[in-house]
Amino acid sequence: MDHNDILRHLPHRYPFLLVDRVLELVPGERVVAIKNVTLNEPFFPGHFPHHPIMPGVLIIEALAQAAGLLAFKTSGKEAGADTVIYFVGIDAARFKRPVLPGDQLRLEASIVQNRRGLWRFAGRALVDGQLAAEAELLCTLRRLEAAD
Image (cartoon, rainbow, N blue to C red; front, side):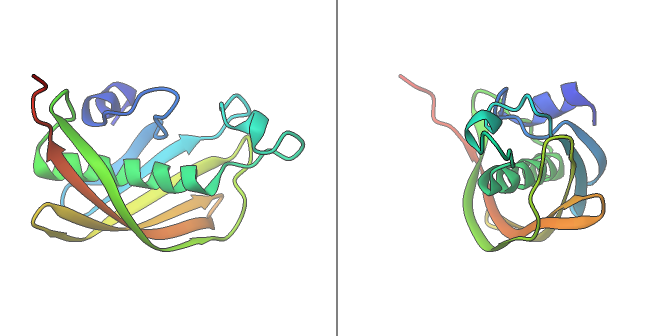
């Protein structure tokens, strides 16, 4: 998936779109995506000015977005004005190494379970083959009601 295809399948936009490219996506199974971390990221000036590191919550968000792409592709739906994916839970999150400007974050997510519209994913974020973070993610696709 290239950037345009990602934009068709995720509702996120700059500065909150955290997936740059999808290397592999097997509907119903797994996704492998990339986030190129640059010094120009809007969070680095405040986290931290003299030692910039990517906030752990944003690493988890990047994993959730990759998992969202997998959910959309598996379900055959696209994000739109009436369809979104909500991040509804996280379990067993662990952070193993900092993610720094210049790193390429490899995002891996696989489907553990999809029951009644609740998706459970196993996610891992790696830098140069080293585990940076891992978590179990819960997401759900929702159709939004039209505003009156």
